[in-house]
Image (tube, rainbow, N blue to C red; front, top):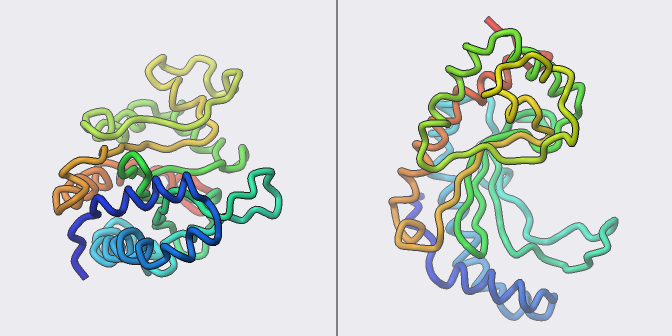
Length: 229
């Protein structure tokens, strides 16, 4: 299945859903959601499956598994809105949760298409070996992030610790923003313009994921089952 871009109706639907976040509205407009949001995202997943498997054969690239539910789990939330106003797809190692391993992602949102790679809310003990390796071999980490720093799209984002981590002491200044991250991901965003309405988006995402690949593999190698060589 070839991905031919989203369309204006994709973003109009998400805007309308944000303003009318009710089950009645969604039921009345379910066809628009399927045709303009979910089906194009599944097509993107089909096209990127072999691209992602080339990065890591262990990534779960089945589109029906990788795509998120637009329904929100409101059981433990004060916000009882039944639906999200965005839809994402995540490629992560099979059998792993997002907080346990790095993952690639793409998300259609009201103001564009976001994409990138990272680890969402990892446990401190899980991320500590990564920070330690950054400090022990700063030149190796600098080489890993060089494609990201050179990218016109990607930048470091996420939540930082309020206080410097133990590993930050004595670390090179250029590494401090990376070492102090709590949730750690690099991300870019294409605004709602001609690029999200056609094949240009495929090229942008392919290059961005390629630029993220050294960091993805670095993360895997630093996790308990990996091995820094």
